[in-house]
Length: 505
Ligand code: XMP
Image (cartoon, rainbow, N blue to C red; front, side, top):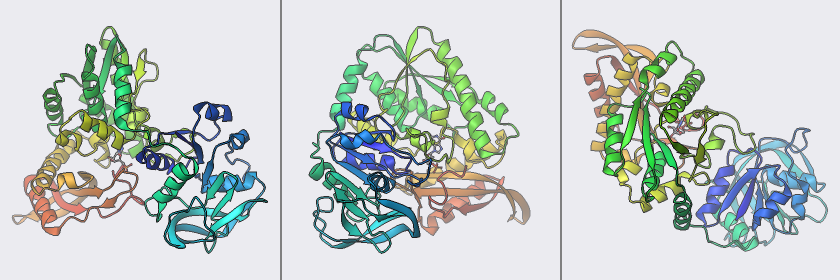
């Protein structure tokens, strides 16, 4: 395996995924993990991630220095490379000109980390405001850019790159990661999802007591439920919490899908609970927190109502933590409070099973395929835990929920008819908090402005708005305004992520 030490970069998990995709297992650990712990894991190499800090500041994050005594290759990326230069006595300072985005790298001499790249100049993705001004003694500079004289360097088996080889926009980024993982670390390509699944099934089949499994209709909990249902003689109870924030007919659709997979689910209607707590609340973070809190309360009382159950299965994924700003190092910035992490009671008397704890979403999808879960279930668009509450701007009311559900239903139907639904990452409606004047059959209509949001993405970390054709958008807008009298106007969101996020709240 390759160990990645997390210094708080938004890209830490991207490094990890790139390496997993090459067939090598990875683990992301906090930046200050002890060198003994790293040695115990016996990795083929260690990567120090990027991070938002300056290595020369008093609060800068430092690794255990004994790490550099372990006889395995180390690669520093961005902050990680500056850290190496700083620790060994080089000079890092605030750059006169920071480098952000596409930057030309010039290779100075042949070397292992940049081997197999056909040109001496190529474009890399940079994101740094500090620069390595001078390298420590005996360090060798291998490549530079206009403003980074030491953009790639080496010292014994320690390597540093100022740019981000893990991001899609760095040319030959995969090649550079392969060079480190295979050429330098000599790691073996022996990680595959089939053997992981086999070992998990074996491990889970040893559980003899009752297991509770909450489902949401989303990919992760569906794959988890099907996985558990395939274990002979396991006593599992599946349940769904109806938050009242789901889309039209969602509960019935989910129930039907599970029935078709041979799974019976219990549905608990907690909608009045959620709606009464959300009454009068307008702030997005406040709404998310309330949904998370009520979910935890309802969840706690439901699981305690099942008698004789000892385990609770959860579909937690490896990056769930970083998206919520509780990355292993606790240093990433909180953009939104995520429901799936915040929404669990903390004082439960259950043992937790998290078979996907170390997996990424695409790996869970692969498990879904192996388990023969139909594509139309696996490929449903992601739906946020707080549901429609984050798609109604301002206060959530029953009336607004009804309006949004009607519009959503029409939109989804049209996307399906046009063969677009499965081509885009996510498509949904947002009921804005604005009203506008319209004219319908010579009458004035003063109704809500509805926004359509459709995005293309591979991992939801970045996304582009989908360039759907005007005829299709025209059909959708006409149908919605004709069928939902409370909506007077339809607009299309043309903002990518970043700077926007996918959901509006
Ligand atoms: P944002 O809006 O942060 O969304 O760009 C990224 C992806 O995450 C989904 N999302 C959530 N999923 N619980 C979830 O399980 C949540 O609280 C939540 N908030 C956003 C969103 O739909 C998109 O796919």
